[in-house]
Length: 222
Image (cartoon, rainbow, N blue to C red; front, side):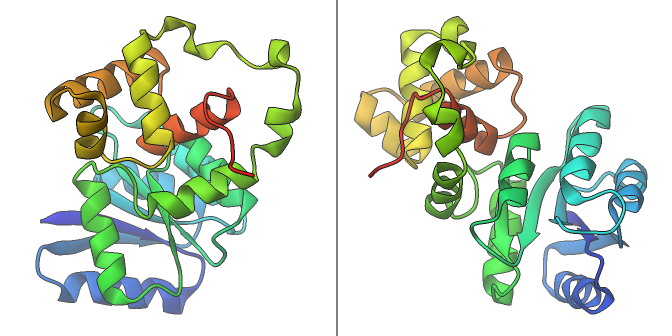
């Protein structure tokens, strides 16, 4: 059973999502929140597997709520799936940097939403990685235009193989595809990824994609 917390400031959207989740086999809506502060409280209380997080809310927005929830998680942190109206949204980019695992457009159908929740709860890369990569590309232009000396040298702690894996992740490859490309096992890919995320203090694969673009390891296609 995948336990989901629904966060959105619009009552009808919350009610629809809660109803959908509770009607679908294998899902349970464990709570609903109308703003970021309530989301932080309910996340600590209900300890969901996945949080469907709206971004633009009065008071504490979804970005700050995501930061707080992931920072306060005692053990297994929930996966945050951002809900947004626009696929190219600077707020969503901020949420990915904060540790969200991916995002979903609000006009997605029920099957896509449930598939996204399943993917995120299972620890998959992130939902719709090609779209997420396009979002990251769009909002790292300013960071990439800075002189190399001004970019954070955060990749210095990684081995050459860990850098290879990070680069392929940012290019949208799945673990099996990376394993095939580098002629290593899928388990080895996971090991390299886990070590990379530990060294860089990352909460999600989406954050790894952001880091890869911001440091210039991967550059947007012209």
